Length: 427
Image 1 (cartoon, rainbow, N blue to C red):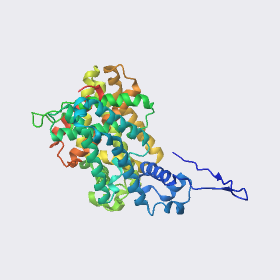
Image 2: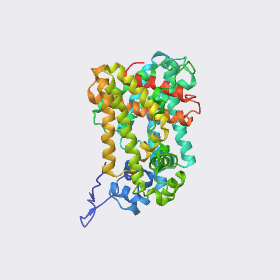
Image 3: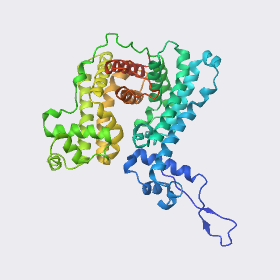
Image 4: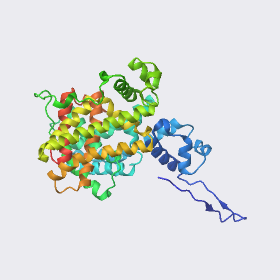
């Protein structure tokens, strides 16, 4: 969003000259421009000069408000956390008696407010999910405090509605509600706000009602769990791709050098250039390969089954299993795609559209009340859900310090149930 700043006349000026006055909300404009720039370009690539140009001021003028890029970044991330806090603050004022009377209405109001916040911050709010790795420890801790508070607020109506939920189940459901409500930040589908709300509210209600499986109840490992996107044993090309994606996921693209990638495989840095022209080429190839493979596997499954009621569960099973078999890819896809050139980013979006369409087709047959666009919105919601809860399952560091899933098999079973709830609108 480009904000154009105009000049104002000073009627008291004897010369009648036009004098530019600094808007009272200049710092707020800078903060908004910074949020959008960091979200679009990533922390490393974003520059103070680019942010200043977006606002229409000089870089020295920008430094009068923020002494350095990190200070601006930390303020931006804190602002987005504040928006989540503001959206759910009313829950603190709801008495226990009121909560017992109509907990569903309280939860609906909270989810609606979170959807409003996500829509308002759509061009920027991906930062709290994608870029918080760059926060310093104190700021990271402050963000975690905000996220714990928001989750606990959502858990109040959940506990009133479902008093039998365990602690880990409550956290699983509250994180899922945040993920679904904020899922609009992860895609560019255009849809009227008035239609986004009922769609995501229905999905959120289904999430809140989901009966999660009991841990250890004879759960089976999904059959496609061996699907790997990269096969490092197949030769240097595959090994370099695999090592690079692992390092990009652990350290970040900007912080990873070609030398480190080469050392991980045991070849000299010059050997990397036998296969790739640059580090950027490695990132592009890795992300495109992953998305093409995901889309291809999903299309292959969809072509096997005639009945959409059979297709959708298999798509869910295969997608969750593949994400868990390739845990580094979600972080790289979410965090580092900003480092792709515009043309390469658009090619990646083409593959993502194929992936989304493959899911939307059986979904509209199962739920004919949905338009194709609505179905695609719900597909994006479940991919956000898998990314968010899958990350918690792998890191075992939920906002509340409570183990959400315990083991990968149980995590996959829970995710499949939650995905079905979002897509089908039922528990």
